[in-house]
Length: 99
Image (cartoon, rainbow, N blue to C red):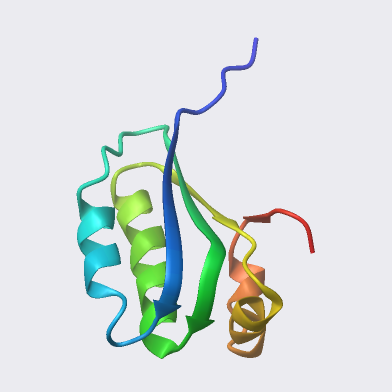
């Protein structure tokens, strides 16, 4: 018998840069994560990603793991995914969604 993990989704939008990550980080910390849950970080509506946004994604993954939860990214636009590819981080994440 297989049980589906409860999912907690944080859908991000706009520019994830110096000015756009503080609110997202506060929302992340407020999520009700528990052991065995799955944190889904949805990047579909992100229009720009810089190193501050990359750091937010890494912090989200670490936050999930500290709570015993899994972590998945929903694929964002090509320009966003390119940043993760160039930094070598794309291979470190479970990424779902169309290419």
